[in-house]
Each structure stands twice: as structure tokens, then as C-alpha cells.
Image (cartoon, rainbow over all chains, first blue to last red; front, side, top):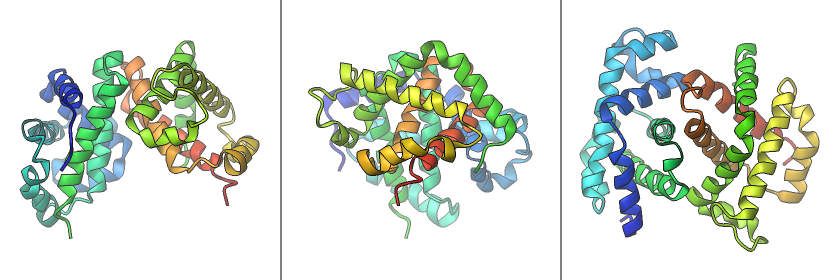
Length: 147
Length: 143
């Protein structure tokens, strides 16, 4: 189980309080599809992803960004049981969606960059550390049911 | 994943825009490296204080940023241009190359923090590729 100090919990809550899921979700997924174009492989049914502009203007990408970020936020209310919280989602991503779990890490990197852009220096090194620890725990839980 | 000429131009342009804040970005980058990835402090056991924001961390972050700027000038031949730096890292410093990736990530975070409008996805991918090429060139002499 992941151990969290009181400070780490505060830092993670503080970062989430600055995130507008409807804004940051789309931005993070768009950035992921542009910076790591091979991630587009999972979105064949989303329509036009042929240019950066198409990705940014694509409503399905934006909607899915909100879904993904909402899913990432779930752990905030279950910080002491992250593994079990994501067990079903892990099975889904493995058995049904067949997503290479390294993609979770790539999306989280892009999310951190988007969050850094929104928060500027208010994202202190200690906050960044706690935030990345949180994302690491979720990514690990999401990858756990793969076999 | 080599850089297109457009991406090289994007890198040079962004680094030029960044130059007034390059010391700050360098110092913040290394502070975040030791904060987010504490195992990297193992390379700095000879410092009295390797905590984020400490004087030696800030100073060394600035040094590293200077090296990155130098590499921008050598973007058309990173392997050739960084030969002696590679020898330094291979034979003397012996920094595990996995750490280059961690440093690059922290640098991207700082760029986004300090230049949120300019650090577009297009700039992000170009700089990410450049830093990856830089890391490869630095690791060239390792074995």
C-alpha cells in the first residue's frame, strides 16, 4: 500500500483544487496525441486526427480527455486503497481496450506539463513530487491486472 | 526520432525566447529533479546540502542549463559536438543514462511553468526530441 504523509495529501489536494477537469482533461489528451503520436493508435474511431489542429478541434478527443482525467481524480477520495479502486478499470484497459500500460505514463507526463502551465511556480518542487507520486500510484494500479 | 529542420528551428527559437530566464529554469530543473526523484541525490553526496532550492543545487542547475544551451548551438551534430562532454559523463561522472530522461522531464515541466503560452504541444515535442537526442549524444561514449 502507498504511504502518504499529511503534507503529501495536502499537496495532492491543493493541485487538484487548481485543476478544471473540463479544461485540463482535453488539453492533456490533445498534448499526448501530438507529442507521442503513436498513442493515436487507440483512437481510430475518433475521426480526424491527421493534423495537430484536427486533434485540438476534435470533440471526441476533448470528451475523452474529460473521462480520463475524471478517472484519475477518483483516487483522491480513495488514497489508501488505490489498487482496489482501479482493479476493474485495469481489467478493462487490459482485456477490452488492449492499451499498452506505458501509455498511462505518457498521458500523466503530459498532464503534469499542463498542470505546470496552469500553476506556474505555485507548483512547488514538493507539490510536484507528491503529485507525481499520486500519478505513479494510479498508473501502477491501472497496470496491475495485466497478464 | 531525429529532428526535422522545422523542429530544429522551433528549438532554437524557443531557447532564444527562454534565454532571459535560463538560469531560473536551470536552477528550478535540478531542484525538481532531487525533489521528485530523490535517488538522483546519490550523485551529489559530496555536497553539504542537496535539497531542492539549496545553493549547490541551484548553481549546478545553472551549469547544466549552460550545457544544454551549448548543445542547441550544436544541434546539427550533437554526437560530434558533445564528444568531450560524453567522455566526461562516461569515464568520470558515470551518471546512469536513465537520469538524463528524468532531468529532461523536469526541464519540460519548468519550461511549461515559466513559459505557459509559448510551450505549445508543437514546442513540447520538438524540445522533447532534442533533449532525447542530447541524452543519446551524452551517452555515446559509455560503452
